[in-house]
Image 1 (cartoon, rainbow, N blue to C red):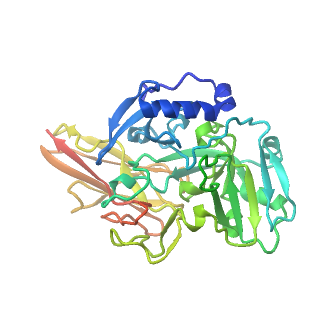
Image 2 (spheres, helix red, strand yellow; image 1 turned 135 degrees about the vertical axis):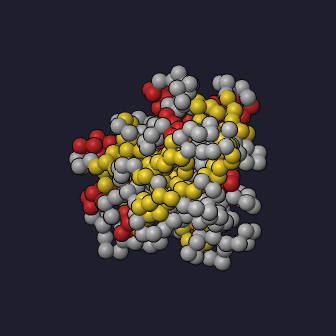
Image 3 (cartoon, rainbow, N blue to C red; image 1 turned 180 degrees about the vertical axis):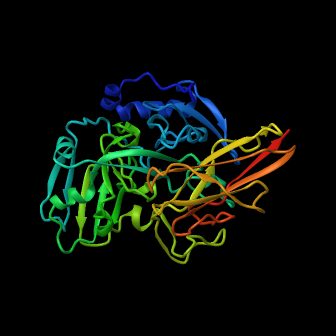
Length: 410
């Protein structure tokens, strides 16, 4: 990806007029009047997408511009286990991005009915009055790979690139909550950022059970891969919820409320819910009898070194590699097949850099002339794995079927 074309816009310009610039860029992109864009044809129906370089980003695959939904080109995941900041996917729910953010003056308000000591937390206090921690964790959109569901479902039709893995630096949420003197009646903690709905629809507010919020892993992060968070990934501070889908990772975090009830806002009670059964699935086309909020990442694995349909040289060893991850149990094994799943062998696992991180795997083979159907299937330390066929639900969430890469040796 050495040919990416980031916009020539300084960080100061970006943060002093971010929303205005994005609005203008969005309108231009939608009408073809924005900065020249490449295009990519994704491997599904109506899969043609523009590629545009937004501020602080290389050219990414554009699902929508208002709100910004930008997908990482899949070849990025073959560059290493850590996803670069300028290639990290973007997902907003509202068109209203903050018009300006002064990182030095930004505050997080901690309050709520079960908060014994409300206070405002400045960025300086966050960085100097608490012990920082670092974690490597995958952030994945709930609708990653939605476009591959059959029958198709509503929502952003993303390929496999609405995910990324990064080093996150910040403060454990439990340390911040301890300063708030949590009351005995506390049941949940809610989180809200600075983005807002221009045409109504309610604030984007998410909630975690109090025990989850206090587990020591949930983090209020201010750095990503050793530098400030990019604007489109939540500058100056974002909630990091390791092992859970990206819907909980609130950007531009500005408010934390400790409450004495189960939160019933739209984005918990109605949005981001899955069928309440073991597979989080239903028969295609049928609604779920009951639902629950989406929660932990399930097990996934991808080959990253070869593209589907590629021609390879017969008699020449193929070094195949890829990534696997889950919701925090950690990857125990990755098996591979060269014949469409009829026979399986163990792949070699790479370094374990954290149970919430991507885990590399590798294997090799020397092909004779002919067609090969490569598949990989990961298992975590609890024995959970991937289904051979995608498990369908009406929202197109949590797809984690075994992927197929077809190669032709000539």
